[in-house]
Length: 183
Image (cartoon, rainbow, N blue to C red):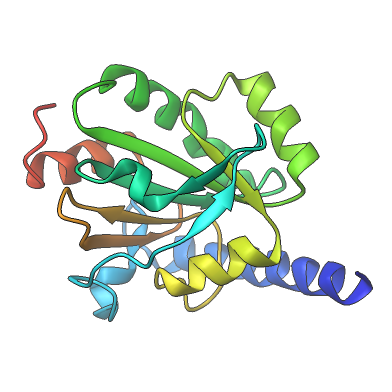
């Protein structure tokens, strides 16, 4: 348990450092897309997984087959993660029942995540896991382990975008339009 805690703290420090460097190097306020670095997962079928949600149900990525999915990796202790959540809540509400689903994957303690999700009235499924979530984000192309990290999956189950850093509402809407979603 002590080693896991040390790893999580080290990951948080590395993620914060990576985020700060990304912000410093970026020419505008948009997140730097990992796709700009030719992420090998782009164009590939999404990795399969099943994880427990904060309600105690096992959720499988297949539950959302046929929809465009934003898989967002975040944590309650990550300031840029918390910045994008209100926009995600708004987008999910606006696009409900249109073939789009946000799934939050918290790299955090389940109890803290449940409390935070309830306070924020998060309106999309929230999965929680510590090491399991970190390993899953790596399978989706998060090679540096930073947060927030998002992967967008098209209706056919192919990963089309990976984004390291904060994902703005405008950029998300633009990507969804590119994927043919009526926004």
